[in-house]
Image 1 (cartoon, rainbow, N blue to C red):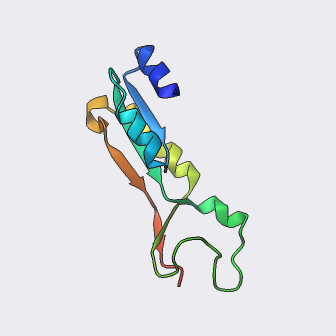
Image 2: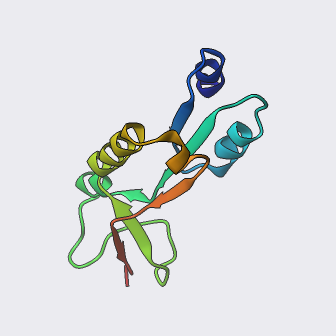
Length: 106
């Protein structure tokens, strides 16, 4: 894992951007690791550019009656930049769910 190489090179903090819980769990279980901040994005708003809305609906794989969170990718980068600019202890081992707009597709 790239994160383990960073910690071996004496990096103090890794910011992981992932929506896959298994990868995050494996990072948390590493021994002798530094701080791990996880950014867990919802659906990317940019995906709408590839799956154009048809009339008044969007095709998706989530249940129609469940809210869906969406976030622009540039917001994720901006949030990571803020985390890197602040004290490591402020974000030590935190997980941030990233959703800007939550919509119900029905």
